[in-house]
Image 1: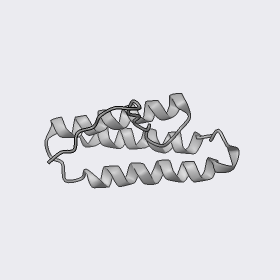
Image 2 (image 1 turned 45 degrees about the horizontal axis):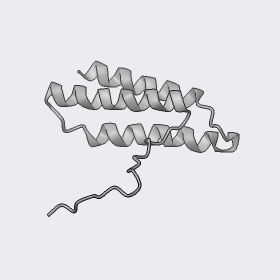
Image 3 (image 1 turned 90 degrees about the vertical axis):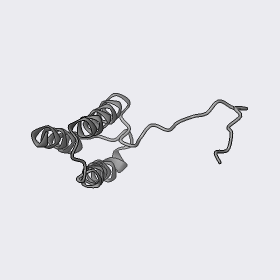
Length: 91
């Protein structure tokens, strides 16, 4: 599983090197964000030992990588709630 994580991390690094922001002035800032966010998430999941959990995290990262490539936005996609939606407070 370690090779899978390293392979994923290499993909992220390659993406960050080739990244071109929609606003050219922010290209450097977004490249740094991509690398630091990947490092933060990978370091935050170092404690995982179960293959199933590790594979889930890699799959989540791959989805996020694909969204970034498709939409040209390195940040997580915002979640929008329908207007007028009733959200119940959890107790």
